[in-house]
Amino acid sequence: AQSVTQLDSQVPVFEEAPVELRCNYSSSVSVYLFWYVQYPNQGLQLLLKYLSGSTLVKGINGFEAEFNKSQTSFHLRKPSVHISDTAEYFCAVSDPVRGGYQKVTFGTGTKLQVIP
Amino acid sequence: SAVISQKPSRDICQRGTSLTIQCQVDSQVTMMFWYRQQPGQSLTLIATANQGSEATYESGFVIDKFPISRPNLTFSTLTVSNMSPEDSSIYLCSVKDSANIQYFGAGTRLSVL
Image (cartoon, rainbow over all chains, first blue to last red; front, top):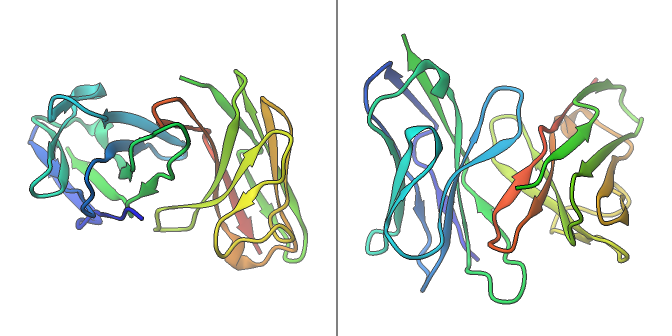
C-alpha cells in the first residue's frame, strides 16, 4: 500500500514570498499524485494532479508541483503567496487506475499561514 | 467535476444518540466514499458505497457503528451511531472520476458532548 509523508505540519510565510510544501511518497513503479486544498470550513478541492507525462504540473491559483521519481517527491510550490492562500494542503497518492478503483492515501496535511 | 452537497453542515449531538449525514451528487456515480477527518489529522476512509450492494468497510470501521445506505446512483447516507466524544470529527462524502480524481463535499462538522 502507498504511504505519503508531509514533513511540515505548519508553514508560516509572509505575503508575496515564495513557498514550498513538501511531500514524499513510498516507492512504487508508477503512481498518481495529487494536491488538495482545504479552506476553513470547506471540503477538499483539487489543486493539481500528476498522472503521466511532464513532471512539472501546473494547477489552479498559480500553484505548481514537480514529480521527482528518483526522490519519490511531489513538492508543491508557489512563487508569490497571497493572504487567500491560507489553508490546509493535502498531498495524496494512489496506484495507477487499471480497470478499477485504486485507494487514495492522503498525507497528514500542511497548514499554510500567510502573514500580512 | 461533480458537485456534492452534504447535510447537515455541522451539528452538536449528545452522547449516545445517532446522526445521519446525507450526501447528494449532481450526476450518477458508481462509487461513493465516506471519510473521517479527526481534529489535526488527515482523512481516513471509512467505507466505499456502491449502489445496490453492501458498503465495504475499512479496517477499524464496522457497519453497526457506521451504517451506510446507497439507494440510488446520486445519493448516500452515513449514520454515526451511539455517539461518543471520540466521534467528534469532520465527515466527508466523496466521489471519483475515471482518473481516480476525488471530489469532496464541504463536510459535516460533528461535535459530541
